Amino acid sequence: MRNLLKIIATFTMLGFFSNANAEGYCNDGIIAEEDANGVITFKGSQEGANCSFAPDEYTVKIYKMALCTTAPTRPTTTDTYDVSSCVDIINSPDGQDVNLAAGSEMTLSDATRPADGTYPYGYILMENTFGIKAKKQFTNTMKTYQDGTAGNYCWTKDATAYTSDSNVEGGGWTDPTPLAQCGGAGGTAGTYTEILDAFDTDEYITGPISVLGGDITADLITDANGLVVTATQTADRLFAIQTFIPIEPVVIAPSSTEFTVSFGVNQAASLWYYEQPVGSSEYQVYAIGSGPFSTYMSAN
Image 1 (cartoon, rainbow, N blue to C red):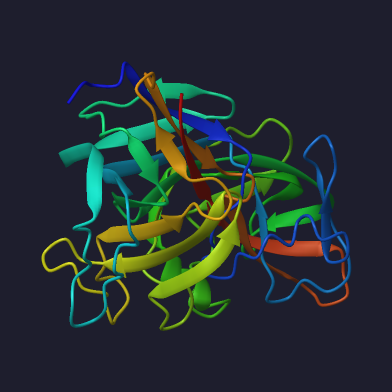
Image 2 (cartoon, one colour):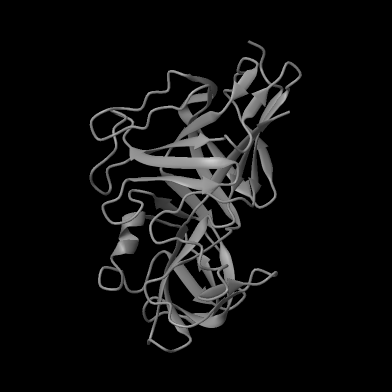
């Protein structure tokens, strides 16, 4: 089969599935609000809530991406996934890193042109790690957990942690946090790598959830057996299926020369924090981790 001239990845503003404690509260206008300049204002009690927004940079590792004529079968704890109706458009045994800044694009390798046709489904197999680089401004006073510096800005530090760590609010967190820092406008963001090992407490599958372009499901699995995990800190892959219909299936035409994969990251960073003391305008921040994201595929 002919190769597409380009398969590109872009960093855009879409929406996707939610993971642990990240529901996009920053834009609900009631609990929190993000203005046109990206400045967040918290309103009322925030204890136990998180806030999601777009990071400055975003990194994932992709192993496979495919289009499917019929719906793939999701994995379970006893049976691996079935993708026999799918054709690969990317197959990278060692994985390829997608490192994007807002508004950027990059050309992906290990690409094959699928046969002409209409594909109502697709899937992506990727590493369950997300590199987040972000610096965010707030109108509230934000404090580095627990007794660290405070200010109207928070930013990521060069560090690594599991998503499940966010479920241990307060007592299980390290003081001071090694994952983020708050202070003045002069702070410089590092890259925080979050290992997505649970969507919530004891939850390792999610969806279907409606997103721009269809519905999506996601499962945390191991590369060794392709099975859904049953414990934290055991997954090493994320398997996601997207249903493009009835919105817009991907059509590969004889004239198609470019395949675009857009990563929607308007909520791809989330804040691990709580209000302290309750009723005050000061917030304890432990990390800026991963939040909901999406993919959208199209051919030209």
